[in-house]
Length: 255
Image (cartoon, rainbow, N blue to C red; front, side, top):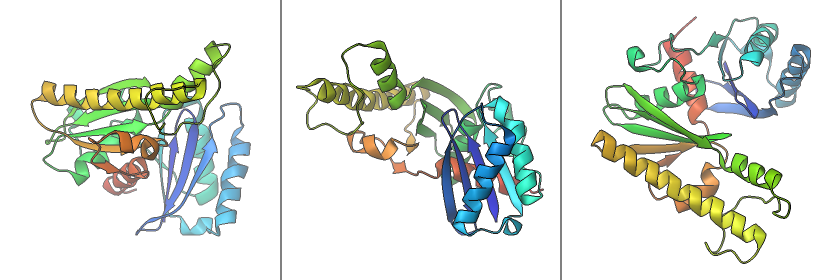
C-alpha cells in the first residue's frame, strides 16, 4: 500500500492507495505551530480509525510547499511505516522534460503536470487547481512545462474582502441564481463565482492563443466542483488529481 502526503498552505492531505484505488483520504489543517509529535498522534489516530495496519504500507511519497513542515512529516512517516518517503522535487523522475521545469515550481504543481501529461500524451494540457491559490499550470504535448499563472483562490479572496471591510459579511460560496445581487451576500457570491468563472475562461483562451493550439483543461481542488457548472471549458474534474500525480511519481521512482 502507498501512503501519499500533500502538504499545502491550508491543509495536509494524507491518503492511502491499495493498488486499485484511493482507499482512504484525510484532510488535516496545516498548522506550523504544531510539533512533530502532535502530527504523529494525528496521523496515527487517522490510521487506527480507518482500520489500516501501518505494516501494510510499504511505500510513502511526500509533496510539500511548506518547508518548515517537510522534515517533520518525513520523520513521522518513518515512525509510522518504517520507510523513508520519496520527497517530490524537480530532480525526481516525473515523465516531464526536466530541463523545462522552472526552479521555483511548487511540488504540488509538478504532480499536477506530471499526471496531466501522463493521461494526455501528445496533447497540450492545462491543470486548474482551485486551492488556497488558484493556479493554471500548462504542459505541452512533448512534456515541456510551458509556465504557470497564479491568483488568489476563491476563499482567499472572500476572506480578504471580509477582513478588510466593515459591513460586508462572510459568505459560503455557491452559485447564485443571478449575477445581479440584491443583498450583500448575493452580491459577493455573484462577483466571486461569475468573476472567477470568467477569469478561468479568459486564462484558457489567452493561453491557447499564445501557444497556438487547443488545450485539454483538467480541474482539481476543493471548490472545483462548486464552480464547474459556470465553466464550460473544463474537460474533467478529479479531486484526486494531485494525489494521482504523487502516485505516478512514486511508481516512476521505485525505492
